[in-house]
Figure 1 (tube, each protein chain N blue to C red):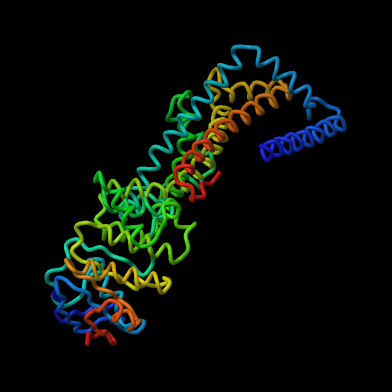
Figure 2: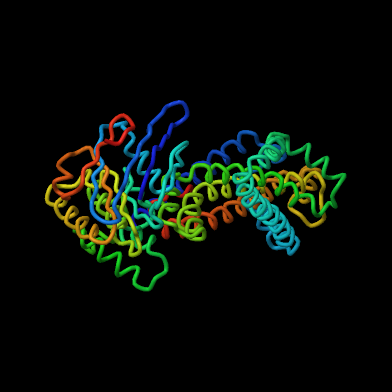
Length: 256
Length: 196
């Protein structure tokens, strides 16, 4: 409890410090268009938060990002199992995924604009960003499962389902969770970037674009803050899941 | 169990040359040899983890219980869970695992610990208990089973192995000649890849 209070106090202190820096900088710049004060941004956010359109846009973007992320994780994980088992498949798939990982997000967004309906583009881009990340991490986790434990399991004739649940999954958990945590950040960044470029109606990206067009800098900050808060909330939910896993497998250092 | 003129090499490096061995169905056999003489490789062949490049193997154990050179315990499972794991979904798995762990001198409190909270000797005892607990094992194949154990615990473990050897083969790989006396075992020596 004491540690928790200390952690909260440190968090509040750090936030207060950076807000003070921001306020001082905005006073120095003295131009709302370039850098609005945190009070102005908070007031703008509050005004936005009182409208139904704000929550609809935040909810829609959240749904798109979560769908893209979930699809990336759900396809990337079994794909990693498949490529780990089948070397020729790995040889075939790996270069493609490496290209997807290395290519600029903007290139994919522009290309995908031609192929896909506007509303589907953000989740598709999030999916593309998450897929290679989850695939690479899960594959690494599979490769690094202790072969000595697998030999022990083979000698004691442990059934495949037991090996999967008791050895493979606990070995894999830290890699998968680490991939999901990083992937979630990627999904938000790429998903919102895609929304800004393709501007689907009633989305955070569209609102950001409009705010920028109208030189409403406080609104740009307010929408960006909303994305950050949503991203942090989702990440905390993932950490909760990691905690649960760690309770079940206490020695495993699950990445947080 | 019979091994006839086995040859085994890791890549270019030969480990066993024409190794022949006749092992009884019951009793304790100690296989002694220096480091690098091929003892562990022979054990891996006997439990099916390696296949020799030449030679003949007959009557290999169908259900061996093995203590490896390393303990090979699941670090995310308690001592009790590690032993119960190999016993499957049988209703008495936990009871049997508890009995096996108690027989090697581990208390209830120690049985509930994760391997990282146990000493090296205690982990060794868990590995030994895991092998002893397997009800339908037709052979115990043990690689340096007494490593890290105190003398009194070695005597306890040796008594358990002698008891187990009444209805199955207990093959102990060791480099300590005292183990043969403790176990009242038949002695075989492996030298430069050849069983003498």
